[in-house]
Amino acid sequence: MSKTLTLFTRAGCPLCEEMAAEVGVRVAGTGCRLTPVDVDADPVLKTRFGWDVPLLFDGDIEICRHQLDMPAFREWLRLNRGAC
Image 1 (spheres, helix red, strand yellow):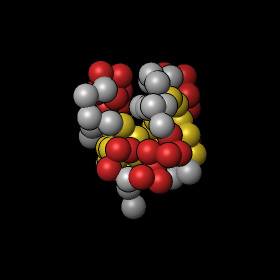
Image 2 (cartoon, one colour):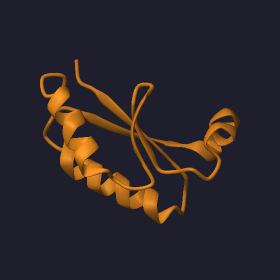
Image 3 (cartoon, helix red, strand yellow):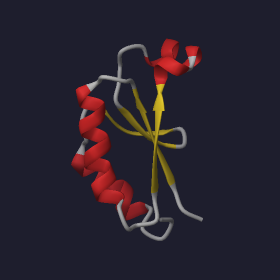
């Protein structure tokens, strides 16, 4: 079973696009999937996150927000090496 990372984002957000590209490159070929979710498409998410995007999550666990935190992401990859 492969892991799915969720990237909470919104259309037209340059930081969101940058994080999506950076994470996408780093998970390519690992079996992990990156699923973008537009917070503006869901009123609950829009209320929960407001303008506080991008946010990268593994389930309910936040990995990083606003920019790719490479030490935190590397640690996530290390801990999930066999799950992807």
